[in-house]
Length: 177
Ligand SMILES: [Zn+2]
Image 1 (cartoon, protein in one colour):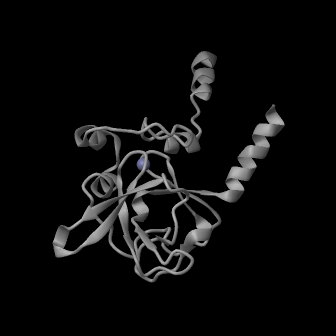
Image 2: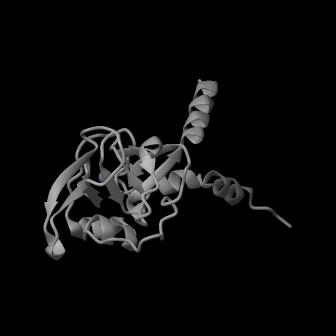
């Protein structure tokens, strides 16, 4: 029996790193590129999974207590799941009991933008990603010190990287060079 070595070796080459696939889900996703992303909802619809699109672009709200990040105490950084923009550090996360991941401070002043939201007869301040303007959630004035703010964020539009993973990657990169 003959073995087709060519097709075997070529399929080996196509072995995909799952980590890369996840992060490259949207072509605009980047942890380094800070240039603004401006796409129409029609374009976003083609790029994003439905649950992400509904919250990020249609300003929906995920059901409370459904996000895996709500109770998470892992140390690391939260990114925008749509574009990769760094949003919050885990040390500003707190247990608000409101059913959504909550933070008292964004990672930097420019990481998010604020917008007035008068929908549903309420006066609220909407929080959007500073890079891609995706809807993230709302900010309220009943948070803990030092800011007194509660950033109530939909977990579906968050992407998390553990500090340990980042460290490991850094060490691996240094070993290679
Ligand atoms: Zn974003």
